[in-house]
Image: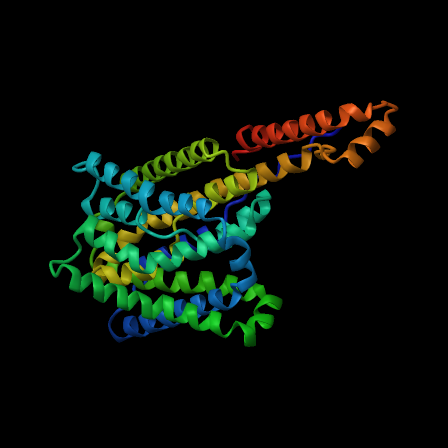
Length: 382
């Protein structure tokens, strides 16, 4: 049997667009009234993006995945407990070794919600529980609108006004992200069919809005002198630390999936939804939470982490897909008397009627043990 060839991993074109946008902002930063106009356009694009995300989310998918509360709690714990613990620990260990603003950006990315589109896409490619991924990723983003500003205020002490400033940030983020999302979802009965038939419109809006926000943020950062503060060595340190964070979280999620004996489909959801951080949510949130001059360097670690997670998760998703395609199909065990009698007749094995109750009980026990082995073994934890 010929082994399938491994397709080479390609660089995500969006990474090249991001680099080009940062370079463009560095060479031609927008200033004055033009900067105000770019900010307004970026806010409108982000609002449109979340409106489309809301319209795309079907209630059937919500109902299908909403009942898996154990999985959703594990994803929540990974996103909002494990990630922040890793981020705070690294921030303390790297104090004095990394530029304080970049260190704050590294900690900031660990406080963000998970991605939506890529988490669902990679879960689908890997053969995971797509309905649960839709619920976990969407719930993570909705909770993050409130929870992330509170975590930022607690971990980064971004202001001296206590809860009032955090509340103002939550209101600002809710108006920009949550309100369009809810409006889009409420209008799904009217526009959902069009959105489902034209899913491709999300990609340019998604990436275009992020590029606009990145251009605006880095323009302000360039005017503030970011490239006199950040060098190649800083970028390499950020890459190394981002890789370390992703490795720790993914390894922990694999261990948790095995500990809780999650089915393969749910383990894939935990791995992908629980290990990502959203650039789509993180960039506009940074604009609402931090001074404009600091947003550029603060989102630099997030941009690096975002591309790293996409690259690694794409490779893992394709690996899981190949494993699933190459696995022999499982034959269901006969469990009822009729199924057992039919299977025995097929192989010419006579069964004494007096023995049938014992055989039925033994087959049920074997079936249960097989399910436990599959949940805890190689197929049970992705």
